[in-house]
Figure 1 (cartoon, rainbow, N blue to C red):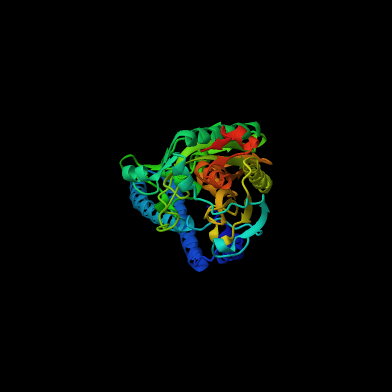
Figure 2: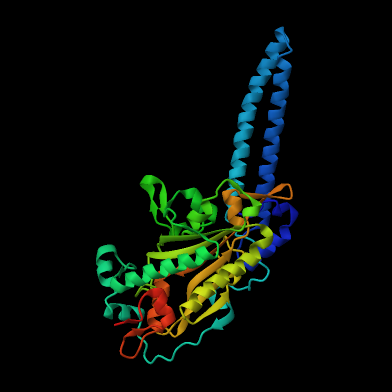
Length: 416
């Protein structure tokens, strides 16, 4: 959530932000709701003040004057209740609308309406010349490390069994990444994957992305689509020591997404599934450091992909493709030979104080309290990296051959 004071102090920047995001939200309507909540709150406070004053006077009165004052106090009490209810309603109406306002876009983010307008920053690594490359699904089935058919009969579409050497590769990748991040000052965490509504609200996934979240209504719990949710909420309602910032975490978890709205898209294989494992980087920092911290998280993502010798490109995500909480976002896309194009394997977002404001996470700076900035970045989405490893290292005989450097990480020099 962004600071509501922007409506009074800098409405033009808000209007420009909504324009850049191509969102048809009326500033006039927001102003009207804001003025109404401020007016009703002031009225309630004035009546409450009058009630308090009268209460102090009653203690000094006697006889008939006291009786009249008590009658007046009773009427004022009803007025206070009515005014408070009206003020609470106006406050709720405003904030129910205000929470849908996305974060202010960083001025450097490219303007555009869809991912096709994301700006390429650079390419790293040269794609190999593979004649008639097979898909990861075909390779995985031939190597007996993937089975989506049986998963489909057990769980439905967009699930898979990972088998044999595929499991060993995943565990080795996760261990390697966690160790790498630990050495860089990230605190390893295995967070809960079931959270309450306030954690999803606080991170900005509710209300906008509620259709992507699996719910367990009997227990008022939700399955996370990323450990970002659990990691961000870890310090809810806290004041973090400025000297401890940046505070970095590396969360490993299974993630769950409904993938609503992707009917007919990436239906084969394990690129877009309902359940996957991921190591997520999360950082709490002060406002002046968040841009540098964003670049740092991106550099870690690059280091991981370079070590795995996966060709990739970095894109600066355009305004129309940003999530509501992100002010700026980078995606790294790996080269997928069977598709002849780059596909997203990591994302890295600076959410500034948007999440911290919702979760009430602050720090004390220059004798005042301010909201921290939060950032998140994918260290490794295991399934998508496995796709890139299989496809980019396949040979004409369908075997998979890895370099010594990669073999040291994943535990295999060849598959098949």
